[in-house]
Image 1 (cartoon, rainbow, N blue to C red):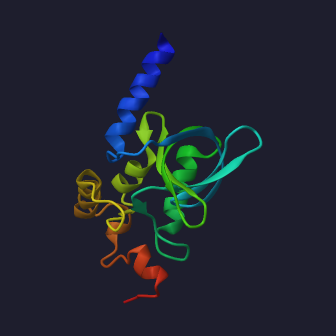
Image 2: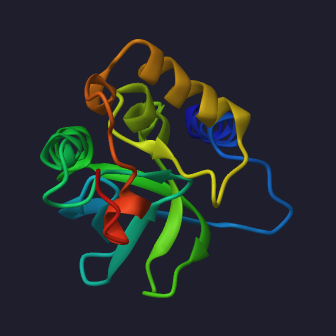
Image 3: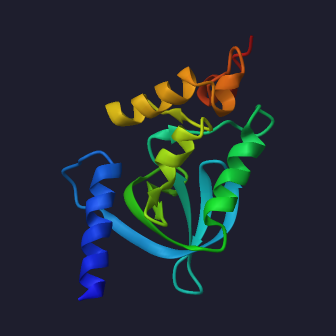
Length: 162
């Protein structure tokens, strides 16, 4: 009975966090064994298979960009060496699973936005709740929003700098 209640709670939380989609999605569960950066990590599924996971609908600062190390430490503190669930939306051109990460009744994608350590990736997401989280962090000058002109990672990758 307790397992059913936990599963129901997880399903309710997962639909609250991620945008509604019409396709069937896979759920991965495993232990986080590596952190690449603020929005990418390695998940160990069955003590032998690893999967690279990229967080959906957000984009964290790139390496050498201000707040990159802070975002990386944030997800390391939150999920490294812990069991997480990932609701996979898709795979990217690098073969990474793009998804929504759940731990301790929280959604990592949302927690990064609230902490001001990520941009809502509007190119791939029209979710107004996620944009509101970014807007609130920006208005309160939380995290990277303390900088007067933070450069979005998609501009940084193209070499656009002030």
